[in-house]
Image (cartoon, rainbow, N blue to C red; front, side):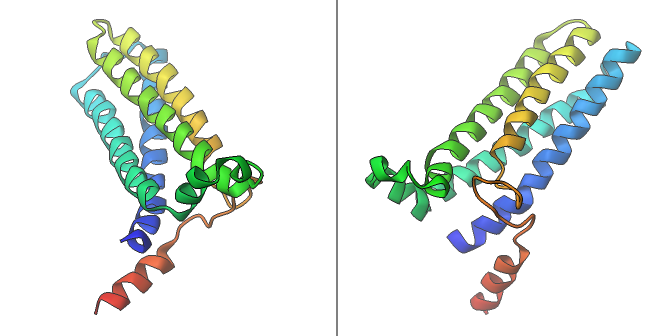
Length: 164
């Protein structure tokens, strides 16, 4: 299961990023043009938060099964000296949880606003801050904290071939 969830989590990262970028783009254009907040805008808000929550659930399952997290909590003192273990054991899950909480709060606050401009402004601020946190917490191939490929499709293919 762990071998399947890692690439799934990797692929879902792109859905989170694309949905956030799209929602932020719509919020920005709606705010600047003083456009009425439509049902479509509300669906974009809702699905962006839903995709982030799905990604969080996958991440939480991975965290429970993760050898990095297990080692981190058993050896907290020495784990902090190893950047990659500290990243996956503490920093990555904490920042991602904060980002999803910010998406949730922003979505909830925007839903309750009466004026369209206020809805767009709320989404723009909260989703943009969450996106910044997510960009910092993703293990990009160029990161000094931990390098991972952009997509881990090879692991999914290996998992599927082992099932047969």
